[in-house]
Image 1: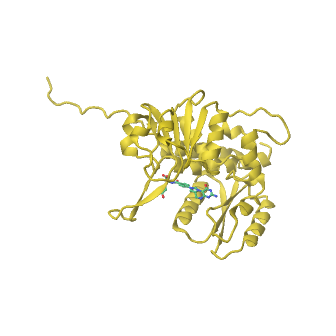
Image 2: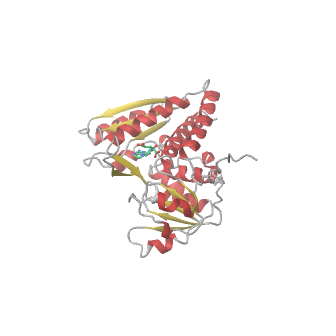
Image 3: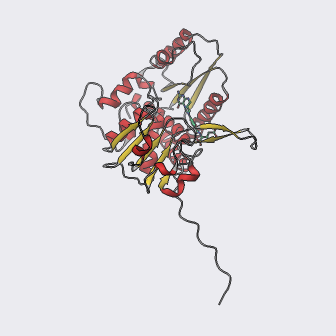
Length: 315
Ligand SMILES: Nc1nc(=O)c2c([nH]1)NC[C@@H]1CN(c3ccc(C(=O)N[C@@H](CCC(=O)O)C(=O)O)cc3)C=[N+]21
């Protein structure tokens, strides 16, 4: 009898890999781009103001991802001192440019510029960020252009208006990891226009029962404990602890908080809104940071851009 024992198999991972899932989606989009290339090459315009290191890094990642799947990207970089009118003029020019199917204004903008006025200048059909008030409104009312077309919320890429990328990425992570949403109790932590509010609407369209907790909620912890699905989108490092969770909850961590880490090359480390090490053992599934929602945000931006190009061409 052999005494050499094979090492025990590692426990099955309960991590949802946004890195892997976004790769899968980018591969699908590459196939799609190549199948439409005789008709159209999707184009994304990216407006960057100033030189915040995080914005520079995100814009670089977005352009690289575009190149990989076969989307043309056009960069427009402005100094911190650019006027609001100059940006709006550029947006209007891009609205009229047939090579451009998506326009992204990298946020945040400097304080002297009213962000809303710039993002509202983007034509709703080219608003691949899903931030234009018309697209936000359609997410609430689920109406299309004057018609009463039935929406298929199980297939977000079929929805005929642009939905914000990070919320869309959260749902896609759940779907592609086999998590049932219908009938579940979902608690969303945070109520921002960028994530908390739109992701709540999407979960509602998918027939979850939603609760939003926010800074004025009394006893957030006991509300979160009722959740089958938790979406954490507040921007507070490691706020959600394991005793906030019901055993077997599914956790999507949208937070990207940078915390000092003098021992690392960069001097900082990214952590989520969830205390991952503490919570991992208690969850049915959980997304890590980095490698969770972040890469999905970019994948959904690419998908919105491809959809935009296809719609222009009627395909
Ligand atoms: N108009 C606009 N649209 C946006 O979608 C937008 C924006 N402005 N401003 C900033 C935020 C942030 N954002 C991220 C995109 C990708 C990652 C991402 O891929 N993160 C990786 C790694 C990041 C790293 O290592 O630095 C991850 O989480 O694994 C994160 C964050 C898009 N944003």
